[in-house]
Image (cartoon, rainbow, N blue to C red):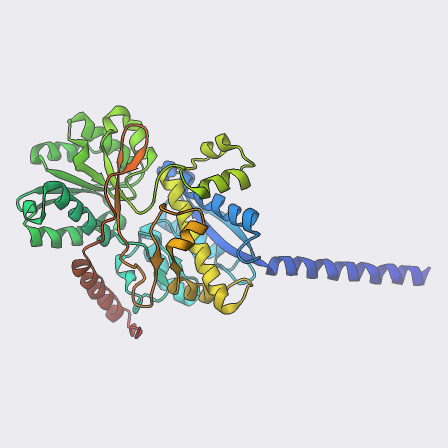
Length: 438
């Protein structure tokens, strides 16, 4: 009896240890990526499709490819409500999860990004603030752990001015033109002001800067000013409900919608649909396609939704911000894959992923293999340039869908890059950082 009890006890211990070892082995083969989302709050209409795009792309990589080189992606959402304090709390909650800690963090808020920049190097968690955040983080000599490719707010603003010059018939036609920047009164909304001011001085543009307070539902006073000033063009750096309210207000005063251009956070389906027919002709910047006309969408329907396209569409597939979340997830996945090329097919640490981000090279051939040919532009990151100075496309709403309305326009690097380096140098001096040599 004693022998049987002892034997069963030993067997149980072996099973328990084996079970723990199996669990650890399974856990060790996972790459954890935190997801800071805002499915609730005033910015939920924008946050939901972004979160769905991330989720579906990670799920696609797991189901179609078996993970990243055999390493499964795990992820966990944390609700920020687009609130900076809650976003930092989410980061602190998730940064140490997974076998190697968080691979990288996508804050999806300029305010949250600013708060995480000093934490990133200390915690060993790189920041991928794709097309948002602190613009001068593009200088990788100072901001080793922050990446904001394929283009920054400053590059985007310069591409907008270039687009206007093309529409008006040349650079010389900008002199005396009245351009108004309608912006969200936050760190994000103000980012483009410096570039627009510099370009206004260079080309003789009459620039007006007009802020809209959070969340942006009340804009009557601003649109009274716009009616008085009668700008030739409006550029908007808005977010969430601010965008749809502004587009409705523009339509109500019969502002020519083809001269109203949003930045890439002011050009989603949720921004234009509430205005109905009044939004027709509205434009915005972008750096990827809209709709479901790419192979990657077919892969998502088949692998994530079991062939049920209607279900995928219910989850916002093809909407501008869904596609943005999807392409953002792709860049993160490919940075991890790049890191594995150097360090081996195993879960990567944040430091290893940082190397992968800095050596990321997504070519046309690579995009084609991912089912994204023509969907976005190739990206090649370097030590000194964490932005890459990617080109910007402009799209236009025809009342039912978005379509490209320009060629890819390179930013004005001769204006933007010196501004980036100057601001980065100032940050380095203030924070006693010795810039790297690249």
